[in-house]
Length: 375
Ligand code: SAH
Image 1: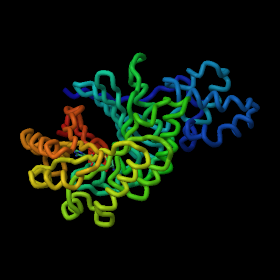
Image 2: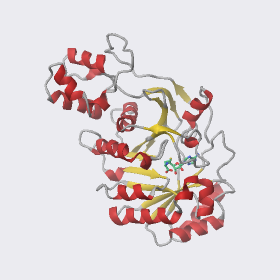
Image 3: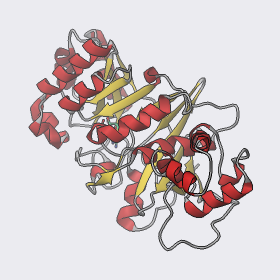
């Protein structure tokens, strides 16, 4: 059953007067104007660090909860800044306790993020762009093109908002950058956000617990390989040859599988991290035995893993996932040829779980269709 709430964060300490334009979000300011602003109101320099720590490391919901700051300073902060740059406009909870949020940014644009719960593992999935320019034919995120990149603060704050949904004894263990957008097309902001996430005052997450999924941008994959951290790389392959891949993933035209695989091989050589290849199974399009054979040949000799993802239905599209028998045949064939492969478990099947589906419903129709199911 779909449980749906509409929520917005409360601000017990409210701005004294309504500002003429939205106040800047504090977290973004903490990286920039905050120290100068504090000096301007006669506050000590170290307050900037204190405030920044509150913002990134604690599960607080308002300025009021920054209890080691004077009430006066908390009020001044509330007058000058907004507590968060993200406003929750839709909150879905699935039967398996997967939670999906539709968030409004300061300029009215929408993005999505998801919290997935498994025994011993709590994974958050975050977005990096408003929309996507890659145009993959099965993906809801790209149907309206790309509007803009998310800032580093907007990327990181999604983790904060999801963290606030969790119980005291729950802890984020993994982050997957598999939401809306092409993460490596917004490389600098992504890296800044991941830095905060891994930092001691952020969530102190090890890079090995973070996976970045890309359509396959060779230059950025190599830059990512040289960043000095052991992040996981997932490459969205979806086809075993260029002719088919260009039909499914149009940006492939200017890149080609050879260049993508060479960059992914470099990623493995430089970081020692096994690359995973995502392959969305589309019935009658890329799910035949021949495709599996060809894929096994393409990946032969590589230390990799294939993640098969039966397509999540997108209401605007006619493509569907193959049935279970074909999905498992495809997986078994890869394994028989020595390629480690698994079928991705579906999370949140009873909510709009396909990537970008919530935003698409809201942006295209102006309203969300209650109870619409992605799969
Ligand atoms: N731009 C990045 C991130 C996209 S989302 C990339 O291309 O990797 C993460 C994964 O979900 C990608 O492999 C993407 O192709 C896949 N995906 C998108 N829409 C989907 C759908 N409707 N069903 C199944 N997988 C989907």
